[in-house]
Length: 347
Image 1 (spheres, rainbow, N blue to C red):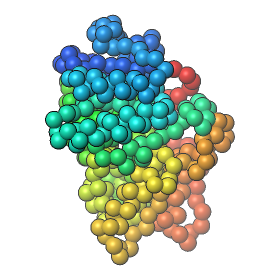
Image 2 (image 1 turned 90 degrees about the vertical axis):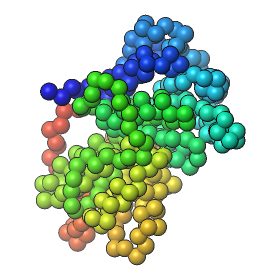
Image 3 (image 1 turned 60 degrees about the vertical axis):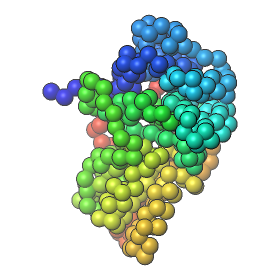
Image 4 (image 1 turned 120 degrees about the horizontal axis):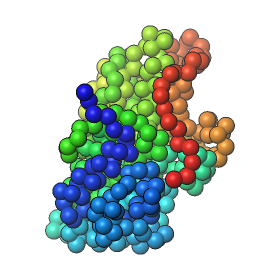
């Protein structure tokens, strides 16, 4: 029988196993030793490993990120947890001008093995300043690796790989993923960065979903099956490095691609993926579409959030339009019976 964990349990287990294996691994960040434990991802770690290795930090993202970078340069392997990616903006100088460049500037004699855990995504009406996703910004920076896994298996494997990596890693976690459950081995294991995962095979259209949008793409596939359409769903898993070979192979087969991002569309991951495919296949008869946040600050009310974020029905309707442009507008009406726990409030 396959062992099942939630996404948050997988992150917690990966952290605990690496802390047990390597005494240089520490966990720091606002609320990591709080009873709610960052949605359960740091639960019990302070009690087991002590407050010298698991400790709360002040409301000072810039200073504490600098501390994490300095600790990494000095031989530790910090996991720095940011409850919201929005406020990683306060530490951009530390991450972009320091962490990402030091190995290059010192010809490989200095490494910065730090993991920056960032929580993104739809929440409970937190509005413009607490619901943003900035990983496209970090995709523009050489020297930073970026992981955004969507399954418990990939979350555990990617986090262990990130902790062991000698480079700084931005580890992106969507709030709604914490309640997703899936197969996850008991022992520690690693995953190679730059390897996308085909979540479901199909022949008619390729759907690439980033982070939680991979889940929405799988739901869209179910809707499309009502119309006899078989979508191939791909989760990039890591955004830097990016597995273009697997994505491109799928698109060459289907000739149609929708990239669904967890961020605003301009200059995003979708633009990068489509551009690379076009560069390698100029003149091909491909049809592309990018989907993502509406180009406005995130609204607070649920009714407006429904238009701001892409969802499975929107994705399915867009895919149908691409396949049958003359058939008129189609929108799925039925609601899929998929068990899901929604994010219901503050941590």
